[in-house]
Image (cartoon, rainbow, N blue to C red; front, side, top):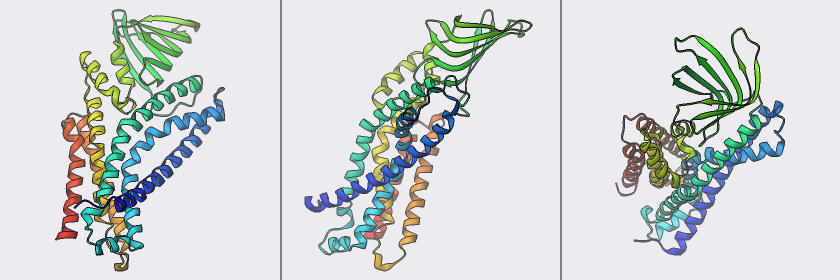
Length: 362
């Protein structure tokens, strides 16, 4: 039986409002914490104004908040179902002959459509803003000492005249530009030749273009330069891939990015996994609804609400951990990307259905 349109819209409206409240709260919390961290780092950056830091935090937040969407669905579904049960609306619906499977239809539909919108519209916007944030951050902090720890990039290049090891404090995503970069140049016999330090380095047409730096060689005075060109045998596609994490590539650009990466002879597993994960996300959100329903349909007058909520949170967290674990296995090549993306979503949905069957029909 299909639930009536009026009752379905009523449940869907309450569920959607709960999702927006939870997601908006998480978004605001992430933005506030990121803004505080950016303001702390902005102390010695000349162009780091409050408005710039606020804009930078706003651009960085959507990509981080996207990871919290499954929990927004979980908590939103639990809050809505518990609230409907507290007000005895679910009791009235059951008395009218509406089963749990029927009044869960709007919840499943809203979760699925939310996943579709999140993948097709929100994800490309978040990825684009993340790239813009990387460019703004590079411009603001290029002369600053306060780069984020653990974000250094390393490259090794072999040339006829000797090996070069390149270290950068930051890389601009989806580009071949490095900030606060150091080139360690070695002779063919392995001995150290000199060190080149530059504010920025960009790989273009088989050459590195370095700006605003100095050359330091043993036994010589440092020699400053405004612009310097250095030959390079590195493939721009390889450099761009190394500097672009999968979550920074919008959904609609992923197929072309994967094709170009494979054409260049590079490993595209991480990007294929990201594409499969995004396609499977609506089913994962549906699984979160079913998990939440398994712990939220008990009547309030029976008590044990706190235990139900705790059980739902733990179950949702375990499903999220399983999702991250399978994605790590898929990224390392131990699992196929399709299996790694779809296994947690399908398994979670089936377990939720099984729990509901036991509660409602068992």
